[in-house]
Length: 373
Ligand SMILES: Cc1ncc(COP(=O)(O)O)c(C=O)c1O
Image 1 (tube, rainbow, N blue to C red):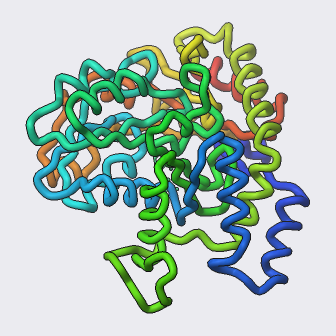
Image 2 (cartoon, rainbow, N blue to C red; image 1 turned 120 degrees about the horizontal axis):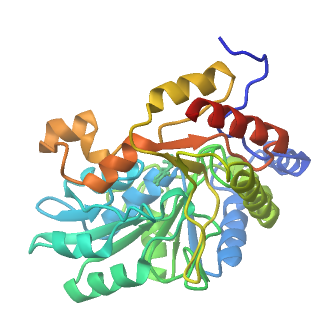
């Protein structure tokens, strides 16, 4: 049972009257699917990021899957990806029959280590799915060099990194096809939803067809040029997306301020490592606030103690290769990616959202300090 009556959730969407207004507009229009809100959302998002094309889809997972299809990742191919991620970054090409190869992450950035990726390349390697974990930009340039050198497809899973910057440019605008996700714990939300950004018109056209059951441009409703999916976003979600993009700068700066406040109140807490700070090449977009506990600390006890005080936490992130279905299917075991596995034992996500109350953050810091003492 919780000590206080009030709970501090792990995440919470940032919504106001403008979101309600635009959603209501769609409801009253009667155009709930394949309507104008989707085009408006895509245009607003593409302009915000400075990319020519953005294709909205039903989720981050469906966006990643479509890029795997377009990249031709399939049977007999190996795809190198990060074990320290959400499962969708590996599942997206497994759906197509490709085999996951997990390269270990860098302990500092928690993102794919390009040297480990290079070491994992074989004659069967067909692609790399790089992830910007916890909104910290991955090493895109070295990974792109490897992809070019070996003729590999490179997909950027930027689902957690909306607003992040790599080498002075917004993530999603570097010319590598990238996917963003809008589940309600993300920086901005559409309820469920995602979007793919690309500089390539042909890729954009393929995305638009594949998300809509393989229908061709200008073809009839019952004409299907290719094997497609129903990965459409609906207009209600897209309307929410428009309102969220309108206030994205505010959202990002509030989250930045919230992260800075955690940095201050947690600065004196021992036995704890705070998230990696920015540098000239990497500017994080704050998706979650994940701390790393010192080795030897009983994380379950810390979680239980915070839970008792009504503070939600999460074990972000288990290593993907050790999930039950991965062990069963591919025989992956402990020791494959030691850095990721070590992080998986010690990292902990604290309550973090756009409008988090500074007093609640202090309470989280106090509770964590007491639990670690
Ligand atoms: C790194 C990463 N990849 C992919 C996804 C999948 O997004 P969605 O939940 O919208 O399918 C998420 C979101 O949970 C994510 O964090």
